[in-house]
Image (cartoon, rainbow, N blue to C red):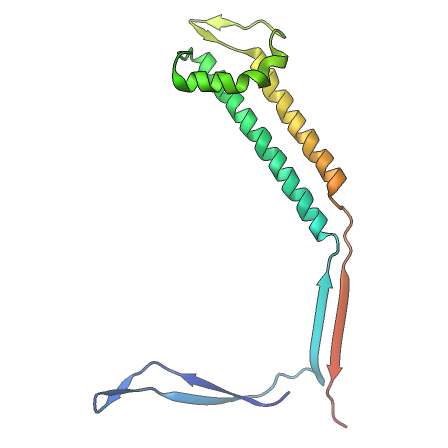
Length: 164
């Protein structure tokens, strides 16, 4: 390595005849002591990182989709428990969107009614079932797409610049 000089300029601090002057300082920097090695380069590469990233993205997408479905079903449960007006636009929308998701579970249990509020047990079962289904699909996607192996390919280069 060669000896290098660094030029450091500081902001103007003095004014001569109305003109700002910049102080300039020059420092000589000695090269670091590297036991005679001029340059060391190391590169690491994992050939399976792209597959792991794809599996991660698929898993996150599955969790997001099932999270939205479960959130809508949870809102349905709350509206039914609080005896929301089914003619209201929001309640009608939620009931319409979630009806296909809870339909396979309708009639599984009787629904207790109290002061107009209904505890839809089939909706609670649907909530649990979709949580499990989302987890199973995400694990299956990880098994099919994800690469659990990890292989690092490392390359090191060093140049010896010692003079005899």
